[in-house]
Image 1 (cartoon, rainbow, N blue to C red):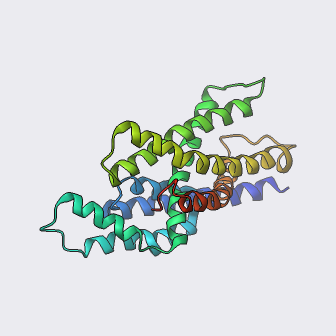
Image 2: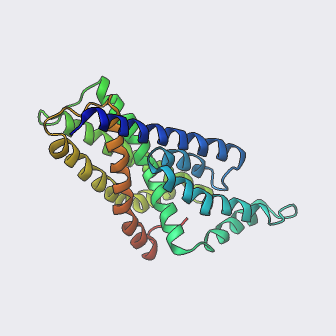
Length: 240
């Protein structure tokens, strides 16, 4: 493998992700999402989703805000506004609702992996003598915490329910989706670490490592998508 060429390719894709995340960040500053947590979700998706993230945002990420904004709200109570926003979400085609639900879950995984990988770079963790196992275990725990937290915020925005019930529902809604995402992500990173770069060190400070992470997130989304479809169809999770 031409290391110099691959590093250049990796640099391009990682920098492209950073630029697209910045573009999305600027957009959500001026065009706030009706569900506040989605402002963060879109930016985190841009880090790995590249042009897919831009396509999704401009295709159905902005439209929801525009639809809600065009409804006269002056004489309505706050609970009616929330109900209207929920009704608008049901207008979406099913694939868009599933995509948003998967991206919402994936945002927690993305943030967790960024935090976890840099933390274990400075503070190495081992499980059974393996640094990779220690790093991945921390990533999973953080992903579960952040994923449930993101889901908790979304549920509390949509429904006025107790803290305990919201946490319980967030865990049920996000656990299997998050598990599927992590399986897809870890599968790719295992291939990259032990097969593609088995003769080289995949350093966390390298462009190549983070490019591999971008691909891992894409695989995580692909594995998580059908799981989210099943969760929504089963009524365990509400489509976004």
